[in-house]
Length: 190
Image (cartoon, rainbow, N blue to C red):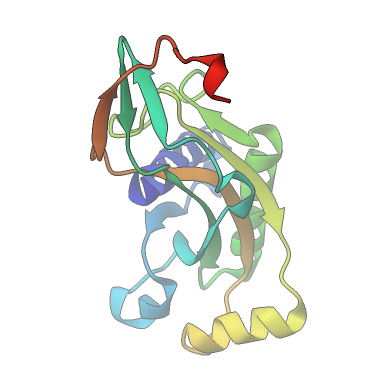
């Protein structure tokens, strides 16, 4: 689900950028590790990199069973994750990189949530109930320095977003039992 979520964001962002004036369309959106910018030869690219994955603890205690007909199906609860996605603007033209950074911020300002109804071209591997909520994430100067130090030391204009509630689930049934329909007992034994 991580790749599919990132790919859906990339495709929607690309569609948005194509609608801009021609002088601002010089950038290509790619999913890749910005740490390899020298060997990949990025130029005039918006590089999407997942730099952190964290579990969403607030929904950790969800149900681990589903009722299907007259059966109760037990399986592990899905893991809900937040992705921290770095949008790096790699270009020899600094002004154009800043314009494209502003365009990305405008895009997410106008579309903060992705789901099946507002993202018709979403990846077919995403479930129909998928929902991604996008929030601007502003790291401190120290954190930004540590991020770029880890990614090779060279810093590009960037913006970071937190993509909330991507669910990861393996469809493995642990147990199937009949549904409890009644409880019988004798109150004299209490």
